[in-house]
Image (tube, rainbow, N blue to C red; front, side, top):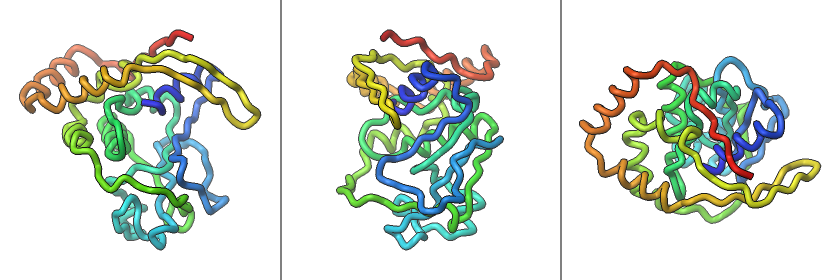
Length: 222
């Protein structure tokens, strides 16, 4: 959700055509790992120092697999702004650690986008030491398991928040926002409880009545 808010607020500041989303606990090692958008969404983090550069998010990854394709899409990702709108941004329903990045990847793939990755020599990152949550919330796993049914009405198009304060600094902008997390938690729980049949019917009906190329970005109150 916060990354969706960051995208919307950045577009208010300037009409950026490329956006990068990066976890705070990783830093790039190679100056040739360029933060530039191309025709395809880009997953820049292909190796971590804390796992001897052969694991990402706890998964052992061979170089050939990481470069050719994997179900990992976390750490650092880049989109053209039009692409991010086309997939309706991130889901707003994930709280706690895990699964929101894979959900994002499936959104991209479902819209016919393919993902580009640098090799594991270029895509190396250092990971800051911090305490990690050893448990992935079961709720997040359930959301992720059926994420394909949800991308059309969960994301930028359903985001609601209020800007409380904004401070612009030379290298960054600090934004204090308020949102109703209870609403999104309840929406996520309702989705988890629906049957596959109910989800499939809603999804088919939606795809038949719309041919939208992108999802509207809501206007937020200052």
